[in-house]
Length: 189
Image (cartoon, rainbow, N blue to C red; front, side, top):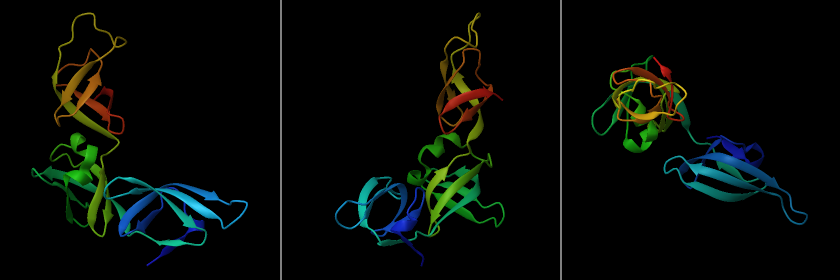
């Protein structure tokens, strides 16, 4: 297995810490006037999402985490698990609610949306929805004559259950393009 020395630490590096896969968020090299140099590191536990702060002496090393990011097509949700398929090998993987996080509210069944899945030893840790999705509005207040694009907005419930703020001129049953990273309306589709 590969090991990373404190000299190799940088943001985004995936390492094992106390048996858990972690991602380095920040790394600060400190050389005090007296004593040995050290690294002050901020890590995110990829299983629980907790942020940890650790100090490592210069020259220490950590084991590399066996983490792979793959792009898969979303198939369906069976009530408990979200199922994905590799478009090349046709291998299927199921992700639980914890791994799905916010991505669950942007995916509709049989959409074949391309999602990025972070796997640790073949088990999904995190699922990232595509940056932009097109969804139909199932519920929103009707537009009133005189509504313009510049005047505020209204909440709209999408077919997946997510709620986004849309301009007043957008009507029920219309499809809209949404940025999944921010949850904002972009345009009519």
